[in-house]
Image (cartoon, rainbow over all chains, first blue to last red; front, side, top):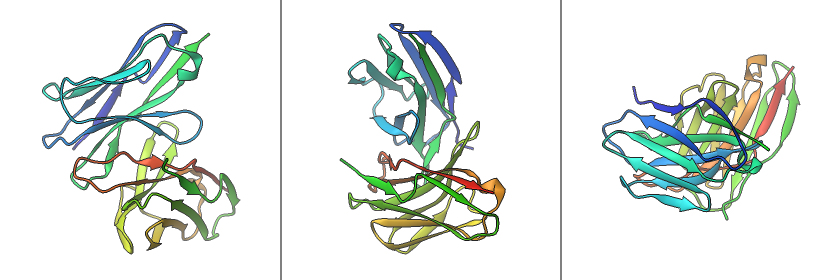
Length: 110
Length: 114
């Protein structure tokens, strides 16, 4: 069964810290991996990764994919309280639906 | 920017009622999805549609049906609402594509069944 596993499930850090969130997957026919941020409402799209070893950046957020080891990481540097959210990763299955991880709940303390 | 609009943010209904949740997207996306999200269970796919009048069951279709008569609109129907259908319902849309396109979400409908 294809799975997407995120770790840790929750994380509490202080403002200014750097965090690394993990997403591992089990699949033989890889297409892409996507990261989302969910605050109080719906998930908002962050990154889509298709190639191994190429970092994608957006401000203090960056993400990279390792297709050989079947995982991706999402880094957030100089965290701010506004980064508090649930971070979700997902990948398409053979029917092009998304298989979602359970999410990492990140809490940034001032 | 992609805009996915769900008709209600909050909805309260009674058991046994027929409930309609509406979703409209304005980006000419082929794919549309309905999820429910419950604490500890993450996002679970109820139904999706890849074209007008086409639908596919997701992981938890029981007790639900869908309708897609126009490309921009995807409706979720609870045939006879039950208390275990109290949840946050999220609609999403995406372009078609073999790599898996990003899904864009509406703000969600928090549905309570009393």
